[in-house]
Image (cartoon, rainbow, N blue to C red; front, side):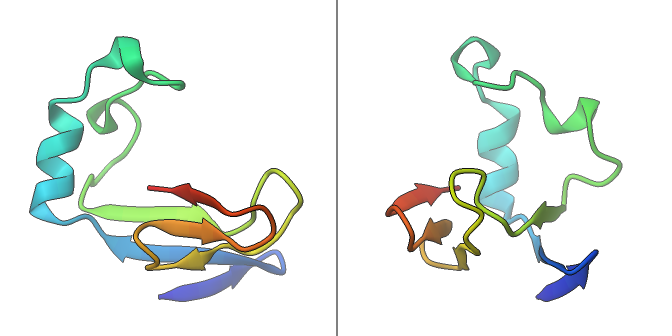
Amino acid sequence: MTFKWRGKPLFVRHHTEKEMAAEECANLAELRDPQHDQDRVINPRWVIVLGVCTHLGCVPIANAGGYYCPCHGEHND
């Protein structure tokens, strides 16, 4: 689902069971922003992200194997 917040797209979806299990096993030392969901979210089932690429401000395409930015070809999970 996509909503607008302050004129910008807000992507909302559910984590799958597989995604939640992978997050629980993540090695914090390998993460750029080392925090488990249990320390930063109320309900890890929900994923809510601002749909604006930090590179050029493009709107990524959701559900393209994650999020895909058409401006520079980057894939994010």
